[in-house]
Structures are given as C-alpha cells and as structure tokens.
Image (cartoon, rainbow, N blue to C red; front, side, top):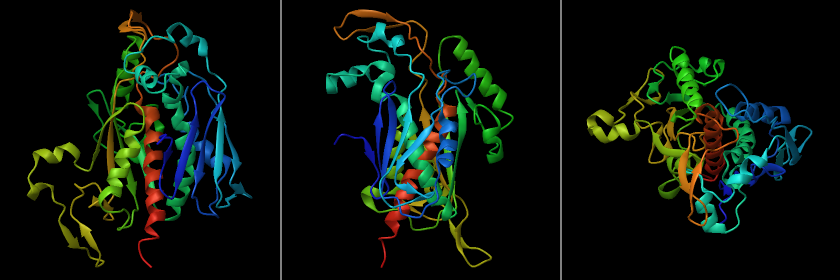
Length: 356
C-alpha cells in the first residue's frame, strides 16, 4: 500500500511536498448537503500555519486554501472534494548543502532506503507540512460532527516537565502555547524560548477531548475507535506515544481502582461514576468524554552542531539551517484535533450501517 490514504467511508488522500508547488487533499465519502466554505477551512488552517508567534517556525505561509471540487452553492455535493494550498515561502537553498547528509531524527536515511530518490527540500513528503491537508479535510469532518453535537478540543497538556493542571477550554486560544492552564502559560513559553535561544528544542504532551459522543460508535476487534485513533495520531510526524483515559497509569492500578462503575442518574439514564477508560469500552463509545493524549518528541531540526554521516558513510558535522519550531506542541494541537475528528466522522458514518 502507498500509505497516503486514511479512513473507510470518510476517506482522505493527501498529496504534495514541503517545497513543491502545492499540497492538497482529496476527500471522498462526504455526504451531500453539508454547509462548508473556504472560510471554514481557512480558520482551521490558520491555527496550524507557520509563523504564528515567536515560539513557532518563522516560515511565512498564508496557507490559503482553494476548493477545487465537490462543493456547490456552499454545500457538499456528495462527490469527491479536492482542496489545494500553494507553497509561497519555501527557501530550498537552505537544504542544498546538506542534500546528501542524513539529519539526525529525520526520515532522510529511511526514505532513501525505501525509494532511492528523495526530495531533500524540507523533508519532502515526510515534512510536517503535509498535515495541512489533513486539517483541511478535518474541517469538513468537524462540520458533520457538530451537527450531531460532538465537539473536539485539543490543548498542550505538558511542555518538558511543566504540566497543565487546571483545564479551562476558554484559555486555550488566548495564549501562544495553547495551554488551558493560565497559571502555567508563562512557564511554558519561557522554557520554549530558552531552548530556542540555545539552538535546541523541547518535547511535550497534547491532550484531546471530544464531548457529546453518543454510546455505540465504533467497531469490534480490528476497527476499534482507539485502534483507529492510535493509527491516525501516530501517523503524525514526531509522535512517540499514544494513550487513552488512564493510559499507562492503569498499569500501576488494581481493577477495583480502574473500573468505571455504572449507575442510573436522576433522569433515569445509565451513566458512569468515573471516566478512567477515556470514553470507550471494547473500542466502542460509552457516552463519556473521549480523552486521548500523544507524546511529542523534541523537534529534530536544531541549530546545535551534531555528528552524522552522508549517504556514502562519510562523517559530517551538521548544523541545520532553515526555519523550524523549537517545540512542535502548539501547532500540533489543531493537527491532533483533525485526526480525532477524521476518525470520529468515519465511525459516525459507519455506524449508520450497523443496524437496519
């Protein structure tokens, strides 16, 4: 399999490279009649685009989206939706001197090993710039989910060893680090700024919460929602860990502590006293909030001198030039939201086939 497509019914195929003419996505399986505009998609792309603040890459891209097909009179037609974003600020000369040098932490060596012909400019297809296509498609998924009352919000849970403790959704977009805890914002920004000035980078954790989910979404065995979420979120570059609910913390607990006990509330509805499972049982939604986290590595491109080799095995000293994020987490938030929404929209549509 080429590996450029994702989804079963609500299916996307992304295309393009970091320094190519453009990047884009073809979305198939979207129902007709969904109201969507370039402004809706642009809003999501603006949250992901480079050059947002002093703690992100200074590459200046407007990331202006063009809808090429599948939308007429402001509504989807049920046919494939094609969207494109042109690259306008690629500086490829930054990569000329290192085109044969394998950058530590990057996919240069593995892409060469697989294809034998690699676009070295900005990482080509392996660049995080590919994710703008996912965000564009997920703007449509978000519209579908919102019709059903489902909302997804992501935020930076941790930078280095600084952890957000008080989660306030209203705070997320009020600061450049997208932290929901206003008391931890300055600490996080300061840490990112320090590593940037040192020519280094820092990792962290992004948490995503989806609310309003009805019980019964998902499929057993191989297509559990958590399995698809893991695949989708781990397909984002730089992700080194995935967990749901309690996650790895559950490995240190007893069943009597970890189980979510059920009860009937005052309205007569079945509910749960806790949400340690993160909203899923057997890979199927239980009506609780869906809670996932991803661990994000420090950015591989740093200006500190590193020792590596070129494609012929000759030793090299490398100091990466160009414009790079000192921390991937703030811009990873809308990307993580996008992947969660793509999975949920796909399962929402698949659920329509579960019963007659």
